Length: 123
Image 1: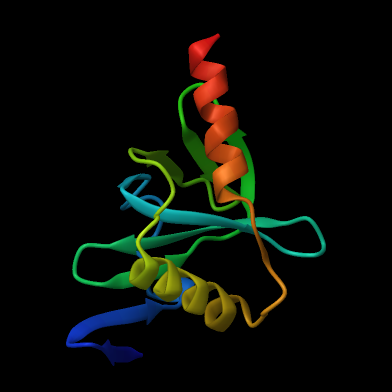
Image 2: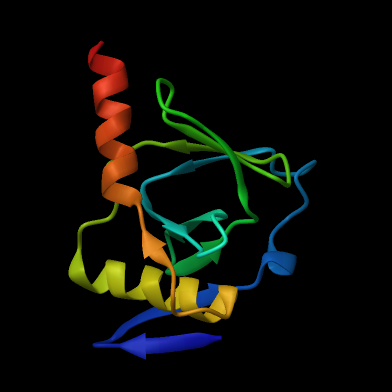
């Protein structure tokens, strides 16, 4: 569903709109946040060029040393940059998580995860 904010467009994309893992086994991600549900499941929320926000299937594993996230679908996400810090972008990612997960009680664990990744690489 396209939305407009201050002349910038963005789109929230449901998982079924994403190409199958066989066609897109990995993704390089610049703009992202990681959220945790009360049940403990974590989901990567990404914002791609063109303003497309995606929420992944549940995270199966996080490789702190290589800065990669693997989801239960089998897709591998390479985190190329720190978690999104821009106010507008974070708002879009938060809205995407709330709408596409159908929840407003997620906990953002992006910064703590990134800090652990940095520590892992430094040791």
